[in-house]
Length: 468
Image 1: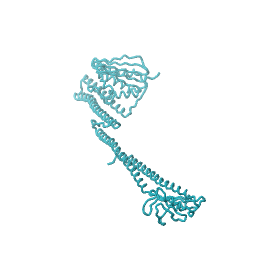
Image 2: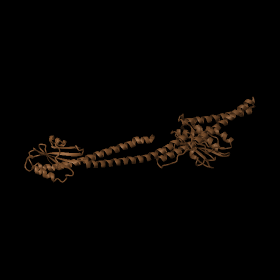
Image 3: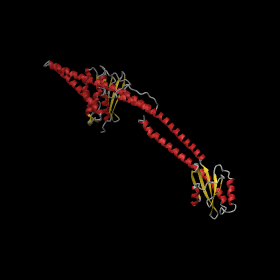
């Protein structure tokens, strides 16, 4: 029944609150009991002082007028209903009582015995009489001005009404404590349910998401931290679903990218093998296709390896002092024939020499190849791809502009995300830009993309130049 958060709340919070309330009730009960009992004792003690002052004028209980004075005071005492007065002679005999009945001399009077042996001549006692009635009794030894004991006066008050009042008060304390505990339990139960139930729903939904059901969502029940958690999990499921779809698209795209060169290589190999020794033209054409497709296949594999290294943060750069223009010239030389074959214009006016950079030669060339390849892929026949190199504010900027179809505004922020392809109809794995962006970032530079539908795309690569 009690487990998890509920169990911790019962053991930690509720038990602590109950313990505190019990302690408070016990302390209050003790304080009130002490107060009431002390009040009774103080009242009795004050009355005893009053009579002691009257009788201390006599040197002994044998003096003339002593007995009549004591009797007169006791008989006219106004609070006979609340307390009983007893005057005891120095010899231990009872002279007079306010009840008019002489008690049995065998009745125990512990306070009287204690007062006789006490240096202060005063003692109190709380206990039960032989009748079973609980009383408070105080005894004071009356001494003459010479210090000789004259008599003893004893005041006794029943504790029945006091105990009844104490019982009512302590019961009220207990009732208030129980009400507080009940309110704590009710409010705590409601609060725990408001947490436990959503958490259980969140847990169940998270298990579904873990099993691959990315369409599972949580209804937001509260506009608080629990609600924020629901929103976060819903967003996470949505992102995981999108990532799963992109991963599937990536696998499909990569499979297609791998199958195409493999099919070409296998087809021409079988053709050349089945036809015996082909003519020179066929041989050269077949070998040219096999080499190109093998190079393309190698590039795809290298791209996948780079992506794996990037994901595992194991990408290592071997930096050296490089001339950006030289590396860019080499890439453009490789891409120029392709542009001509596809009927596209590749425009590049080599600028004045610029400062060198510290970079990984192969990785930098990979980035240039990827960016120029993308520009040619998305540019139609007779379209233009322009390359420009600038030196601004300590950075060497390589700007590649095309007149292709452009990128939709909604897709533009995500084009550098892994697996994302804005245009599914164009070949590619969807990880090239993500790898290029990571390589440039590790070089301390930036890769920015600007685009518009029907306008084209501009990619700016900025690399920090070496100070000469």
